[in-house]
Every structure is written in C-alpha cells, then in structure tokens.
Image 1: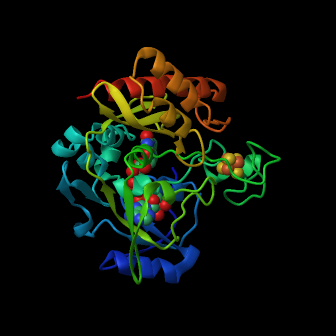
Image 2: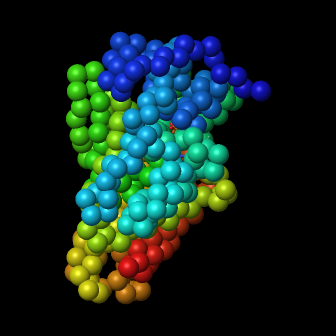
Length: 328
Ligand SMILES: Cc1cc2nc3c(=O)[nH]c(=O)nc-3n(C[C@H](O)[C@H](O)[C@H](O)COP(=O)(O)OP(=O)(O)OC[C@H]3O[C@@H](n4cnc5c(N)ncnc54)[C@H](O)[C@@H]3O)c2cc1C
Ligand code: SF4
C-alpha cells in the first residue's frame, strides 16, 4: 500500500494568507484543494513538499454567481460535480458543464475542484508511476533525473496537459483571478499555461487561483468531446472544446481548443479562421477538423498508441463541431 509522507497541514484564514504562506515556504510548501490529483502524487513521491497549505475550508471560494446574460463567476473551490450540475450554467454553456462532468469519476468529481482542475499537473507514463518504478528505469527530468525518457535528445519535458475544463475555458475567453499576498490580478486562462511539461503554469508558484470568470455566452454554442480508454474514470488522451457563434446558418466566429495533445491546451487557430464566414456543412466540418488536428503532437507517453491518438484528434474535433453547431 502506498502511504502519504508525513506532512504539516496549514489552514490559512484567506486566499491571500494561503499565498503568503506558500511564498514563505518556497518549494517546501504546496497548495491543496480537493487533493484528488495531489494526494496520489504525493504517495508516489512525485513531489516532496513538507507542508500543505489547505484551501478546502475557504467557503467563500465555493460559490457560483452571475447569470447567462452577465457571465458566470465560479469560485475556485466549486466542485466539478457542482459545476457540471449547475442548471443555468449547463443550459447556457453546455460545453463547460460537459467537460466538468467528464473529469475522472463521480467520487472524485464530488471532491475535485474547478481551480484544481485548471492547475492540475501535466502527465506522462514515465512520471505517473511509483518512486520504485521510476527508480528502476532511471528517473527523468520532471522529477529526480536529468533526461527525458520519451525523447532522450530533448532539452525539455513533453508531459501532457490533461485538464478537461481548461480547453473549454480558453475557447470561451474566460479569465482566471489570482490572489497573491498583496492583492489580486486577472489574466486570460489562455495565458495561464506554458508549453513546458515541468513549468506548465505561467502564474507565480505561490499565487492562489480564486475564481474562474466565464464571459456572457452571447449566443455561443459549445461542446466538449473527450476520448479516453475507460469512460468511467480515465484522463483524456485527446479532447476537443468548441465554441461557435453563428449569424443564421453562418459561423461568424469559432474557437477550437484541444486537450491532451501537448504540454498546454492547443489552440487550433487555423481551423477557427477557416470556419469563420462558412456554413457548418459536413464537408466544411471535415476540413476544419483536418486543420485542427495539425498542431496536435501526441508523443508515446500517454495511454494507447500515439499515432492512433493523432488520427483520433480529427474525429473528436469533428464530433465537437457537429454537437456545437446542432445546439440552439
Ligand atoms: C484516477 C484519477 C482520474 C482522473 N481523471 C481526470 C480526468 O479525466 N480529467 C482531469 O482533468 N483530471 C482528472 N484527474 C485529476 C483530478 O482529479 C482533477 O483534475 C481535479 O479537478 C483536481 O482538483 P483538486 O481540487 O482535487 O486538485 P488538487 O489535487 O488539490 O490540486 C491539483 C494541483 O493544483 C494545485 N491547486 C489546487 N487548487 C489550486 C488553487 N485554487 N490555486 C492554485 N493552485 C491550486 C495544487 O497545488 C496541485 O498542484 C484524475 C485524478 C485521478 C486520481
Ligand atoms: S516527457 Fe520526458 S521529462 Fe517529461 S515526464 Fe515524460 S519522460 Fe519525464
């Protein structure tokens, strides 16, 4: 049985105090919300903080406010189940609710938070393993080693961004509210990520994500389609978030963002531009999906064969566009 290491647990009175505590602790401290990703990783010794700075008791961060017309604000501690089951949110932005409802499994969605989902660690078959497994084959640069075992000549880590909700948030031009010890700032969710499997977040390590702001739907038609081995629990191995704005039968604007095909969510801008001004006919959707799949670069470090995953990107994009276009 894998056990957690011995850890100190702090319960700061506010998000600003949590950020101050992590800033003071440096690499010895880590934030924890639901712990659904962090606790298994600590058991596998993929990180080694000696102190966890808890957020779960901060009730003021567990609210959904706003409306379809004015935009929603989701506190970072809103659980994935709460986001997926919020009636008004699900009615106006079904793509976001679908993504939250497709994360992992019901017990983990009841505890896992939308903030933790945006900040969730990148994944790799050579990293998401026990300490003993990793030691037996030789550590990699993401933890304890100095080479990449997937691409040995590479100077960087290619671990995979595996958040289901981040691509939808980006497609909707959502922003993240970040609290530091001295105040808050807001930045686009698209700017929250770096294309690097190790330093995958662009926020300062101590900053606490306190809220996700989803702008007014403004007629957006959204969908999220996810590919994984077991529909009951697994992380995505490819996924497509789509937001379409139409004027009558014609697409005026499109956003397609892919999950699990790079170290950050991948924005398929060529496909977005191609769709604008066109009717989403089957031929147009097929061509858009071909374009969207081009920037996807799956490597041999996630479930199932990477060349098959690459081929399936086109399929998930096609289905997501069809679903979004078909929504009133
Ligand atoms: C078996 C299994 C299957 C899973 N399947 C999926 C899946 O299909 N899709 C998916 O997206 N995820 C999946 N996950 C990962 C995880 O359950 C979710 O991503 C969940 O939303 C994480 O939220 P949490 O609150 O539990 O985060 P935690 O585990 O508490 O934290 C995750 C990371 O985010 C940081 N963090 C948490 N909250 C904040 C905050 N407010 N501000 C700043 N940093 C913060 C933590 O420091 C940590 O680095 C799976 C996990 C398991 C164990
Ligand atoms: S991509 Fe390479 S460096 Fe990154 S976790 Fe995997 S093996 Fe390690």
